[in-house]
Image (cartoon, rainbow, N blue to C red):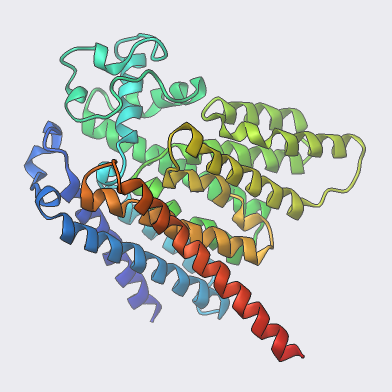
Length: 376
C-alpha cells in the first residue's frame, strides 16, 4: 500500500511540474522551445486543473497525517515523502504563480554582474538586459534586506552567467534552507507527528518548491535564534535574529518575545516554550494580516506563522492555520481565470481565502457542542 501511495504522490508532483510549464512567458527566450501559449488561451481549463491540484494536494496531506497517526507511516516514511516532495517540484517553472524569483535574479545581477547598488538603481535602468523582457517589478529597487542581497551572490555566481542554471540554483538554494529549517524543527520537537505539519504542508511545498520564495531563509534564521535561546546562547541568537530582520523586516515583530526570553534567562526563571511558540506564531500571523496595508496578502507569507506549528500543542490553532493554508492557495484562482488584478479579483481572492477558515471554525463550534452533549 505504501509503495502505491508514494508512487501516486510522486506522479502527482511530477504532473504539477509539467503543468507549471504551461505558464511560460512568451518573452522568456531561454525556454522558448517549451512555450505553448496554452494557459493564455484556455484559462477555464487551467483554472479547473489548478483547483483540482490544490484539493488533491490537501487530500494527500490529510491522508499522510492519518496514516502516521495510525502507525502505518513511520519517521523513515516521512523523510522519504519530504525528499519526494522536494525532488518532484524542484524543477517546476516558478512563475506559474509568482515572478519573485526573477526579481531575486535581477537584483543579484545588478549587484554582482553590473556591480551597482541595487538600492539605488533599478533593473530597468540597464537597457537591453534580456531579463527585462519577462520579469516584473523591473522598475523597483531592491525589495529585500542587505543580508539577502549578500546571500544571493552564492546561487548567482555559481550560475556562471547562464540564466537557466542561475534560476534553478536559486530554487536549490531555497531547498537547502527548507531542509535546514526542517532539521531544526525536528531538533526542537522530535515528534514526527508535529514535523509533518510544516514539512509536508501543501502551501509550504508549493510556495517554496514551485514559487521559490526566500521567506524560508528568513524563518530558518528565526527558528535558529529560538534554538540557540533554548540552549542559553543568547548573543548568538540575537545575531541570527538580526540577520533574519536584514532579509525581511517581518521578523522584527518577534523582538518582544526574544526580550522576554532573555529577561527570563537572566532571572533564571523557567520558560514555557509552548506558550512562547504560540505567541510567536500569533505575532507573525499579525504581521501577515498587516501586510494588507502595505500591498496585499501574499500566500507565501503564510510560511511566517506556519514555521512555528510543529513547536506548540494547540490543536485548534494548528487547524486554523491549516484551513488558512488551503484558502491561501485558492487566492491564485481569480487572476488565473480573469487575467486581471482589478475588480472583482481582489474580492474573490478574499472570499476564497476566508471561506475554508470560516467553515473550519463552524465545524469546531458544532463539534465541541456535540461533544459537550455526549458528555452530559
